[in-house]
Length: 378
Image 1 (spheres, rainbow, N blue to C red):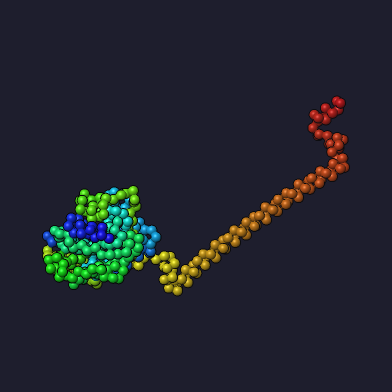
Image 2: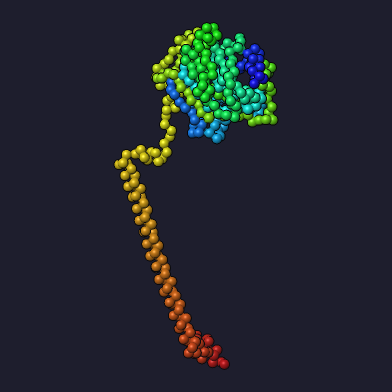
């Protein structure tokens, strides 16, 4: 425990707690496209759903993830891997809950990150070799001049036990919660700059793991617990459930109206978001479901049509059978007649033999005169 307390203190001074410092467009100095809103509450349970990347709701930003034993598994088994997934949608205040197990492994970092376009950020980060604590952290507008915002909070064996990690976020305060118990609270006014660097703009959700022990920064390697030993791979972060509640409703997108990065500069477009529309679409119906949804008249018509087809097929089958039987009877009659003829000839032959009808004297002479003349010569 003292060891990890020392690592946490060390991180405050020399380790970049790996703030997400990249954005495709910074609204602090550019005019950026609107961010698609979630504007609803939704639950992804890995027992019957996945973090589907085919619908435009989630994007893969690293190697793929797999699904096994009711978990989404983020696996590192070789250097350079960083399995990560991020939402296409944004939330503006609200809550995020993730039920998960962190990855084992010295130097391996598991993370839940909420991040905005102007680099406001809320973090949960687990070190693979730390089985007693998780780091909570925040950043505002990409400010990394100091690393004294991290707070390590106790958690029981996060690599082997499943816990519910929840972030509740509004314009007044930010809470980190483990299994229903608040472990840290950050009031708006107590954030850096008297609230200026309080996370306060629409955020995406990112889940993943990465090898902090492979960093070129010695500070990061020490913060992550040391270099990664890949002979101990694979290192697996397991996510069982993701629950997201955007505080806004009937909003299609969020737009920065100026370059201040203040929450009151965010404009919300009214309407249903494309993301919520995708998520609320019913799954494709099975044939049984489509049939059950038909009105009674249509079902009767289908049954009648099917019955008619069956009757026609049966009738055709009967006709074929009758024809085949008639042809068979005719062939049998012909065969019987041929047999009777052969049998009669055989009987006649036998009778003739019995009467000596085939002796030499009984054979009639040929009427041919040539043969007759020849017989007289003898």
